[in-house]
Image (cartoon, rainbow, N blue to C red):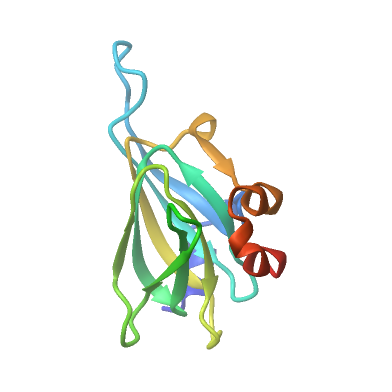
Length: 153
């Protein structure tokens, strides 16, 4: 099944960072715990969409299911970029781990024949109060040596 067909099947809603999602699992949190142990979503990035650079306070696993290979762009501590490929093609992995505090975004590879359908698992579970979109201005201020890259994003 194509990634775009999976997105229709699961009735995804727009996501603030780009793409669309549906929540699959949220922990039932006892009153003595501030948040659940983990959460999971299906996430679809259409062939013309991208995931804005953002940061979470959870570890996040991206698990490939179908569609075009994704490039997950990770900002290293020194402001340089590292690209991990998520997909089935050579040089790609089926799972990419993004540790808590990592700034990252996602784009399709040049071969855009379909969108990409993945699962994202966060440990501990995702909350919007522990999530933020990272702005271009913030990155230019923090990493001026990478100005050429950020100016073109």
